[in-house]
Image 1 (cartoon, helix red, strand yellow):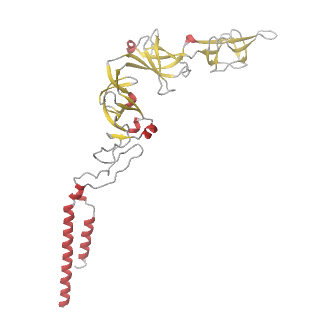
Image 2 (cartoon, helix red, strand yellow):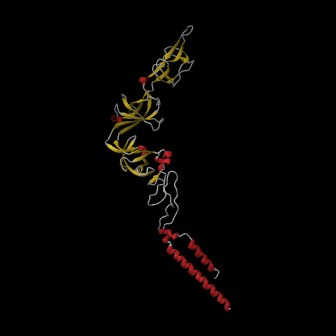
Image 3 (cartoon, helix red, strand yellow):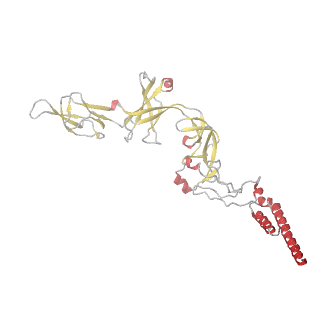
Length: 374
C-alpha cells in the first residue's frame, strides 16, 4: 500500500501543472492567438513606400452627370476616301520594286517599275506612282512577277484618320445617331481610350445578323492605330442628373457584396474597406447610392492587393498594426480575467495536494510504530 502513495502524489502534482482545459470553456481566445480571415472587413495600413510599390492611385468620389452608353464590338478600318490602289495598265514583268510594305510614301512617289512584254529595243518600262500620301498597307508582287492589266499591285492608305466600324442590332438602332460621342478601346493599348464621333450609318441592315454598321471617325496622328485591329466601341447615348460616381476600377467584390477601399483623411496610410450600394454605370464610372460621401478618396489602382492585408487593430485594442510591409504577430498573453477565473481551481488543487502529503506522513508514522512494537 505504501508503494502506491508516492504514485498518487506525483499524479496530483502533474494534474496541477497541466493546461487548464476547463478554464477555457466559455472564454474567448487570447488576443493575437488567431489570424484575421483574408478579406475581412476593417482598416488596413499601407506605408508610403508600400503604396508606391503597389502602384496605389486614389481618386475622389464626385458629383457629375452619369452618361448612358451602348457598347458594341468592331474593328479599325482605313478610310476608303483616304486610300488608293495601284494596278498595271499593261502586260509585263516586274523589273523593280521601289518601296516596302509599311513604308511611308508621298503622293506621286514611284512604287514599282514594270517592263512591257511588247517588242522593242530596249523594252519600254512603265513606273507606277502612289495616288495618295500615306503608308503602304498592301504589296502583292516581287521582282520578276508577271503582271496583267488591272492586276492589284499596291495599296496605300492615309492612316492619320481612321474609322472604327461596329455593328448595332436592330433593337438598338434607335439609340444611335450621327454625331454621337464614341470612346474606342483596343487590346493593343490596354487602359487607353481613343475618342471620336459617329460619322455615318450604313444604308441597310445585314440580312443574316439583322445588324447595322456604324462608322466612327478617329484621329490617329501618331499612327499607333492600324487597320484590322479589334476594337470595342462605347457610344454615349444620353446623360442623367448629377450622381455621386467613382471609377469602375475602384469597385471590388461580386453580386450584392460590392465594396471599395477608402483613404482616411487624417491618416493617409490607412484604408477602410467600405461596403457600397451601387446604381447605374457606364464604361468608366458607376453610381454610388450609399456608402460614400462626395470628396472621399477611393483606391482606383492597386486595390486588389489590399484585400489580402489583415485589418489593423483599433487604438482601444492596443494591438500592433498589420501593414503591407509585413504583419507583426502580437504576443499571446492571458488576460487578468482569465487568470482570476483559474484561482479557485488552483486553490482546490493545492488543498488536495496538502491532504495527500499529510496522509502519506500519517501512514508512514503508523507503519514505523507497528514495526517497533514487533
